[in-house]
Length: 389
Image 1 (cartoon, helix red, strand yellow):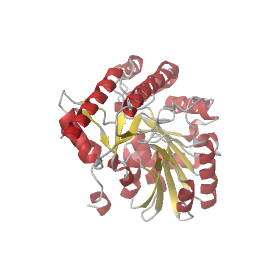
Image 2 (image 1 turned 120 degrees about the vertical axis):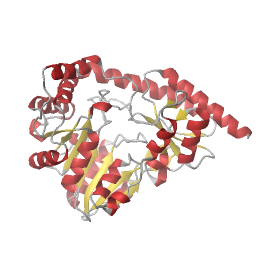
Image 3 (image 1 turned 60 degrees about the vertical axis):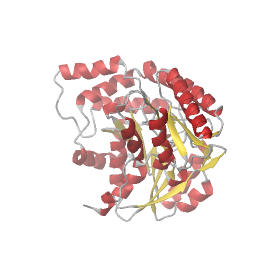
Image 4 (image 1 turned 90 degrees about the vertical axis):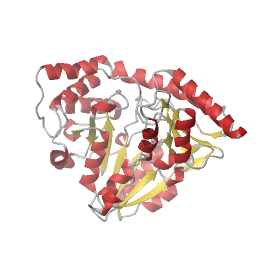
């Protein structure tokens, strides 16, 4: 087997989850998904498609109806985005992998802003790239970009810059000025920007005029070296459906269609039908989801901030609280202990980058706010026991 594959680390999030799966007494906040089911009208669209017998292949790039619906949705948020720039994929992670396959050769240099969901650094490594990480800097619990360090890291030798904002796990979000600075710099160096913007609607830092976080699409030209990744998972409560999309320069769309053929052939038709309905009824889903997640965020952050020894800041976007527990510097060991001893399932910070060692990620996407309250009560009780022992 290829050494690049053998070198891949197993998911530390899964390692923790495996210790608690199947236990009814564990409150699970480890995975990045809501515990609310997909709205019934989206599910019904898939059922209706299956009842019609739509069990066959579709176009590699997706159903024309879905590509047009995605284009309309993106245009409403970011200005004109034509359907010829849209490729439908079997989930956001599939979109990311296809983008990396399209852009990265073995031996290429890739720069990534970390901490970040580990797939984003693993995927270019699978392709044989050299991944150079530029870490965000924690400042009183808030993570911030070291722009001079990032600009210094991106040179003409850098093939791709990977940036996820709003960020999983920290909640950090790029400002418009930071995006413009990066875009201008990457134009000079000839570097592609691979922007994971799947959390753009989960944004709580004020009115941007379009109900989402700043996007590179707001400022980029059609033919800029920019690929943007999106997913139905977060904003539409469709994690298990495995449906996503890419926004591409028009010249890349046809080659990406070939890559989709060699990866998955196409997304399933009944899933795509559900995606069309989700986009048609966006206003029935996403605003409610975002409002509820903001209430979850505000509830959890206030409770955690009142716990002695906790260091954190309010995330501007995403669905996670990222925090430290004073005196508990091994995040994997701490997360495993919390599962067994406290019945609380969190993700270890070291799963996202070495600089996040000692941090823990808590997904606050819970349909019931009392689950968050109970989780913090369990954490506080466990910390008191540790202080007494």
